[in-house]
Length: 202
Length: 144
Image (cartoon, rainbow over all chains, first blue to last red; front, side, top):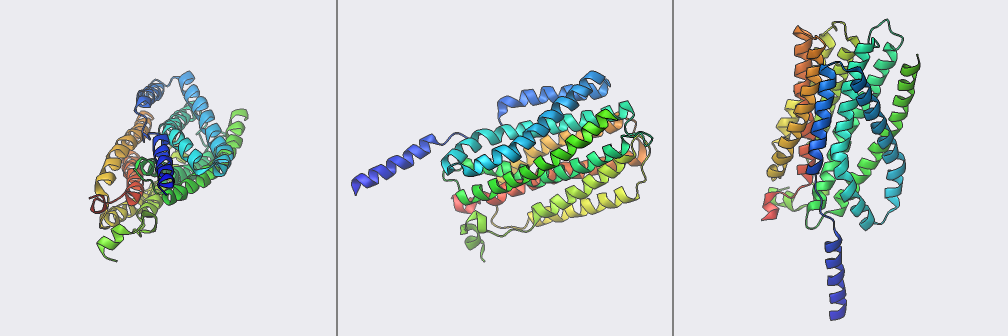
């Protein structure tokens, strides 16, 4: 009985030792975010065509690719992992997403709007006008999902994982919500790809 | 259910007013208003529908703020910790969007409507995040 007790205590201790430290906002990443935001502001202020194109294309490409990859590849893989492996992955993956995704979205949208204005694509006479309004609608739906469901779920999971004894039911519920909404935004990104390639080729 | 019983219940099964849901609808209305206005750029947009959406969004934000103040016990410390940092982040984001509109010579009533929408946006998102985090956090009554 004592041996069993020792083994159980050892297992619990091992699990506790193995639990990674969870930092909700990776502080080391904040200066990079600040530099990127300052770069986008400078690009808009100076109507700097190359920088606006870079921010929109690089930011949008990463945003689309990450959304598709998380929703359609990482999500299904995550569902098949053991709870311990899922917790380990989540503790390292989610904090990066807290900084990365809002920065990419801000870069893409702010630079994209300015670029469309500068290139005349927002003009009602432009053949791209309708496509851009369609892209606003797609982005609008994605923004409501991301800001109303995905991001709060992400941050709540990180806070839950910092507790001495995390509630696995809370984590499971919120991770399911995260993966489903990431899947929806991933699929919506296909619409963005179609629209943006149309805009670029008309 | 008494406050003590409510606090003792598992976080997943505690019932809360639909604060995040209402604030998300408010956010959706603001985004629709923003899309309407942006779809007219660089022309001056008609303001009737965007103003109506901003008013409805603001009313839903105030309602959800009121409902957020009601649950007892509640992890207020956690709520305000998350709210203030999220507010900082989304105030920067809203400020940047506002800057783009000012830079593009949006002036007068359209700019005022956009600024009101941005304020609602900058309050909606922190409220949704902070309330979602705090509703699953352990209230102080349990922590002691």
